[in-house]
Image (cartoon, rainbow, N blue to C red):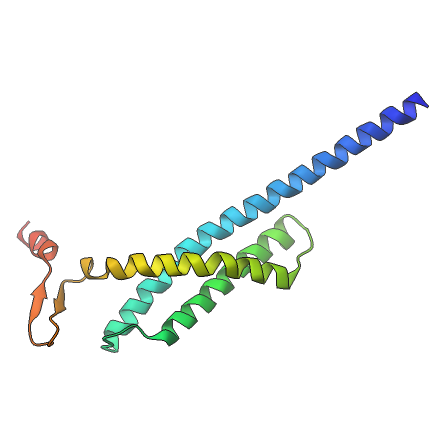
Amino acid sequence: MRIDNQFSIAKNDRKNEGEGIREMNTVFTYIVTLIAIGISVFISLFFKAELERMFREKTSVIAFHICNILIVLMVSFAFSVVFSVYIFEKELNLLLQMLINMLIVLPIYFVGNIIFEKNKFKFRKYRPTVDGKVLVINEKFLQKKKR
């Protein structure tokens, strides 16, 4: 009897150890997905700003935001699926994963958009005034030219 009890305790310890590894795999998956989301948000916001500048839009276009969010969702979902299914070989609930990715992507996109809009004019060589007739040259660009 005693040997059987010790064997079942050791078996349960191995089972709990496997659950801990699975949880660490999930945490690792979400950390990598979070990094991919951050990178893709700022890349997509940069492209959105360039497209708006190319089309000479004065205000932000909502269609670009919707496309950016969909692109970032696809990237995050792809990272989640690849790490969960192909690398760690565990089952994936698609609807739950899409909901979790959406809850991660939306706040990061909105905060990234606010930060990007604040700093948008720092990267431009010039910006037009309100009436559009005068160009105000960025001082940082002039300092780079003098060197």
